[in-house]
Image (cartoon, rainbow, N blue to C red; front, top):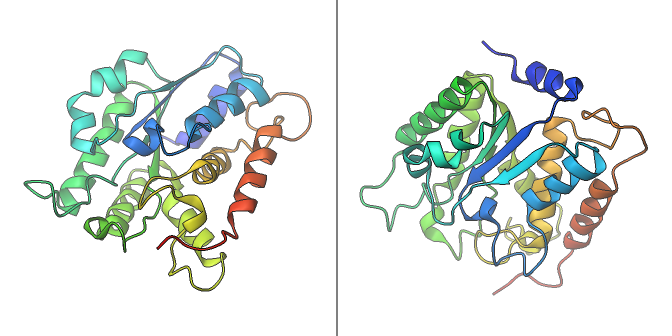
Length: 251
């Protein structure tokens, strides 16, 4: 089995230009719900090509609002292969999990098979796959996403079985919720713009999770650049800290 972390460390240490492809659904697409602020892929673009000094790298976002894992597989050449990537990150599941407006409904084992197939295709390209669980949702206002936790677990299971780098955004959002005080019903109020789309602070937390999982802990971290800590990560941490104490959860 390929040791993806070792491969990624080698790619970063080589100094060769890398192509990073981020794909998924509306959360990665990153429109509207940040209210004009940067989405998490934008933050990671600045982290990789700015703070880490990897100016020859390319960071590409091919996510499409409303998409699911099966749709991405059906358009894999355009979403992923066309760009000849070195690293491919997938966040998916928020649309796949709905039990109301999909016909037929996607079952968890079928979803898991799609995720495993995605990993297989990425590795056939010679690229490093990185899987992300979707963030949690406000199920009171999005009851059709009640299975979201099961779909997040399916991604974890595929990552464990196939030794894939995992960024567990679902767990990060759940942990955030536990620290925002009484009356929040276990929901990450300070991180959401609606029932399941992260706001600017939510995208900051997504970027922090990805950076931590892949070892981008500072400008002199995985990328091997000289200098002190990462300004980008410091700014993102400050944005998340402010969001920990919203005035009042939405009604």
